[in-house]
Image 1 (cartoon, rainbow, N blue to C red):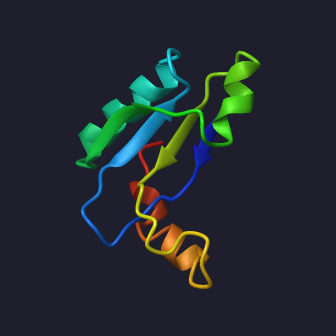
Image 2: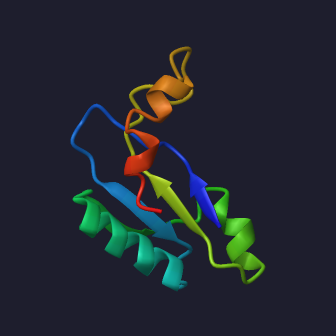
Length: 93
């Protein structure tokens, strides 16, 4: 399962490909490899703070894609435009 959180930033912030702590999985590895092939700056990370957690707790391989740029998050300007500044085809899936 791939959860798209804040993906896209006007700043030079790497894409974090997160799993639940202690549960690195093949999906995370494949996305990291694809990001590298596509020239996308990405890093492996762990997080319990998003919608991927409930899937991982049920044994489903799950990752969260996020670029932690909170300039617009949870504000009146938190729109789809600011959530996906990268073209969707540049997401390494």
